[in-house]
Length: 379
Image (cartoon, rainbow, N blue to C red; front, side):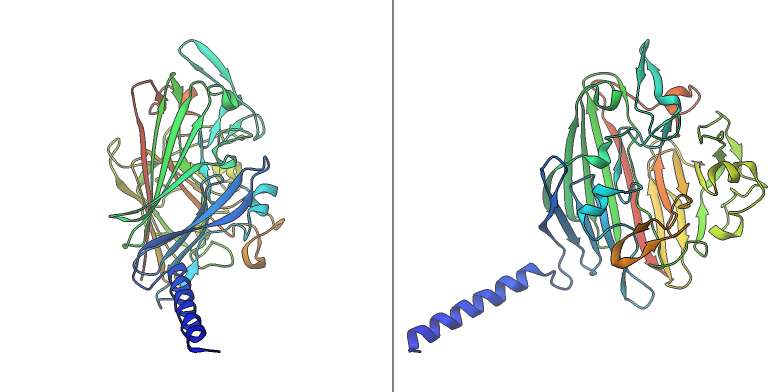
């Protein structure tokens, strides 16, 4: 090899090292990367985006359904661990998913009998949860490919997703333009900011549906939960609100003081029996539209703490009661009964049919706004 060849080889090797270093997240440097993640059923390419903050925390989000496929945060010893359930590949989400990590819409939670009236018109939705409509219907926001852009913003790396839901999609009126911004901050917060506008009066209730396990394995019964709510919303046997706001005092739904999920989850209580455990909405003690802390979850083994903040009036706490061992997810973990839990800030279930609940109506010229923050720390 002559001297020119040697210098050429060294130059190429140096360039390769620089490129490889640039593909990883340098310690302490917030950044975002993109990679192919497969194709949607219609052949549309799907990408996955990895957000890194300055502390080494990591969030992986794909633009199919806005799914948070992985969220790695430190335990009390500084070891990173994934705290959300899901799949290693897109194929799992396409085959069967109980809304793992997704963006839920147009309407999160249930609408009774798949019908509501607005402006004198009755709208009929798909009934995909017994007699009711759940989480936007058969082809909700969790099953569409969103247009994605990335920004290294002041608050941290940001992924911006956009989708226009056409008038009549899943039975809902109006062309609804939705933007969802995911930010991973240096405070170990995964922040979600939703906005939406419409050209026709409609209803909208967006939320996030990660199944959390702060230990990273096993059941959720040892997680200690505190919810800032004096009331919860009782439901009937199909999990539709009765219209009552019931005090939590003296019930298994009183989480005003830190209480383990497993302490009362099998109580002899009609509401517990209807939900198969916890699958209810709590009425949060906060002013309308105020960004406030709604819940705190602590897991003693790992020392991880998750705070839930939001501007929404309600918090749906779901204890993974329908996980049944039929799903094998990331790393070969078969998800058993109550292996994960959801904390879904939102408006109350069935609000379009409940005139005494806060309104979910969005009119032309108005902007729907909803902020959800999952903040992680340790004890």
